[in-house]
Image (cartoon, rainbow, N blue to C red; front, top):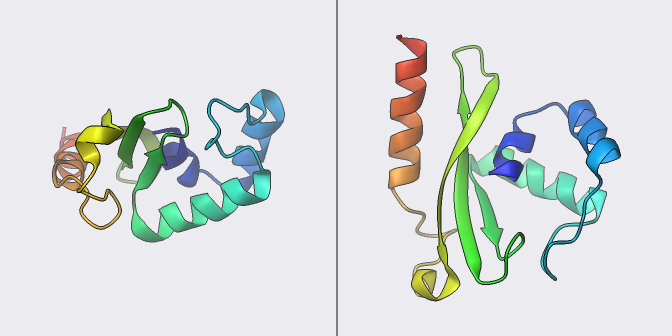
Amino acid sequence: MGKAILAGLPDERVREIIDRHGLPRMTERTLTDEEELFAALEAIRDRGRAYDEEERMRGLCCVAAAIRDPTGAVLGAISVSGPRNRLAGRPLETDPPKSIPDAQNVIELNIAYE
C-alpha cells in the first residue's frame, strides 16, 4: 500500500519522505534505490495499482490501489495480500483481484457523496 500512496504524491514530497525515513531493506526484493523507486512509482501511476512481490515480507504478495478524495488527493489505500503459494498461477499483474477496483470505486463514491 505504501507505493500506491507514494505514487499519488508529488515527487518532491516523496523525496522528503525518503530523506526522513530512508529506503530500508526488508527483504532481498525491497526497492532500496531511489531511481528504481521513482520508476516503479511512474509505472503505478500509469496502471493505477501497485504490486508488492515479496518486497516487505518474504512469501507475501500484494496488489494495492490508492483511495482519493474528489480533488484527487490521496487519503490512503486498499489492498489484497496473500501468501505467494496461494497467488501462484494467478499472476497479479495480468489478473489482479477484481475486488480492488470495485472496493476502490465504492469507497471513493462514499467519500465524494457523504
